[in-house]
Image (cartoon, rainbow, N blue to C red; front, side, top):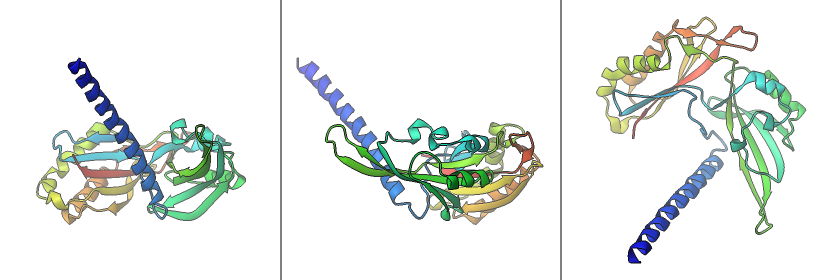
Length: 266
């Protein structure tokens, strides 16, 4: 009997920890969004991610900044429900308003279009039509939700971020694993010499042109180690000519911006 009680008690404790962890994670995510009204909350990792297999101290990723949405899908949309996944949208009783905000240089711009329902307004449709590939858009919805238990109305908001991509995205000619291996092997020497305690996560944006070349390389956040930053730019630039360019819905080659990230492992 005591053994049964002990096992039950342990099980209950584990369940409580799991539930608390889930609630706490959700709480942190909501607060992070609320604190980022003047900037961004990076809700997703880049779409293509690979882990450094040779040196577990560092993680590499190359892909898009946020969740991706094809431009061709946006052009057909009449409602936000046409391009947002269900998990990106909470169950709602009423929208107060929905804002589409263009993001540039990691900041919200004054390019904003609004609607009062999930149906896209004329200004929102025009914004989506005029947005180029690699444009980042924050979709913020303020809403009210009525509790079935208390019948009280609760107010909140959610704000998924999207990156607009071509029909076919740019890719490294030898494959994603080969790209990460190239970055790892050629950057290993300079990374060995750094003070890891002073290292900061790196984000570098670059454009794969319709000719498969690399251009417009720019560092959004540096590593706090100039030699590392210089090496990263050198390696990304050095991959020029080794990319298959992105294609639009017509099959035409187009430019696409991607982001390279380097961070320390856990």
